[in-house]
Length: 453
Image (cartoon, rainbow, N blue to C red; front, side, top):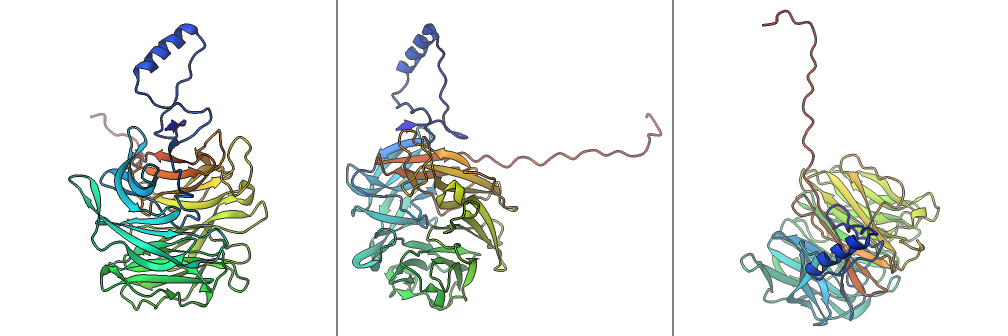
């Protein structure tokens, strides 16, 4: 592991003086310490193990998540170079290294996954994938894997009867979520149409036939995608992009839990008009206050330098949308995601943007940046934000992923990314402290004293 300079809780390296005597003392101390790799100048974050043998293991368009928090630890669906399979890994926070649990998820290479931990089971939807702007193809099944967790041994084990087939398609993305009735939903794009499937009769092993989302705006282009979000305690939402000329928008529809599977609300336009849609989508919902708000980090197709290229759209409980720019075309950001810190009422957004030394704007990666905003008065500052993952030797870090879950002071934040040039994972860890205490009351005396006793 190559450890970069940290933000918040990441380790900071001491600057060694120029005196020979001090150097000798430090050298002796370093020899006595455990052997850890040193950071390259300018690195930020933690360089992790290789993913040699697979392609883009964290996915691409950010609708999918590969991390989850459970039982005091961060876990990940990561590629094992020794086994040449996807395994469950656990993050050791004290060393900031990932350890392979040896539990296999998918033996196929070059698959992408979407991971859901519901507090009782781990669900992993794994699919072979097509390249950007490439039509989905049949003959490559997408599977749902399910695992149980043993709190005593702190291990996962595959559940009987899994994996089960969700569809028979190779798609760009495949996203899952679970509603309040226990039904697991999945969505993807095929044949220029947004598709859905779901489990039947309360059985995660029994899936119905895939069907097209019943909405005229669900007829899309080959470069469009969709994502799901359970919200409000009893609803499932679907967001999809439509870059077609007649329905150009970021769309959203709602299914009431327990209603007929094909009964969805009329489409809402979270963003509308030319240039507002692209296929980068990441969704979260606010659970703590019961408001049912939905937060969508998306990319636009704007080209004017002063226009927003990544946006945060917020849906109120009443179904109205508010829109906030995260970063501009001139910042060259893409593949955004949002995390909600419910304890501190803070939104954390992460995305790729050009990194050092060249800061070239391209589609091959750069560095991972973060911007934050108050949850209840959304506003993001100017510029690219704070770099949280930088490979100073190779500006091709990309495809950041995290969790579907909301975060707090107990969990902190972990973001996993990859460098497609070096073939290494990288991650960012950020501690989240408790909210500041309330301001003490200030005395405000009026009048004049009448007695000294």
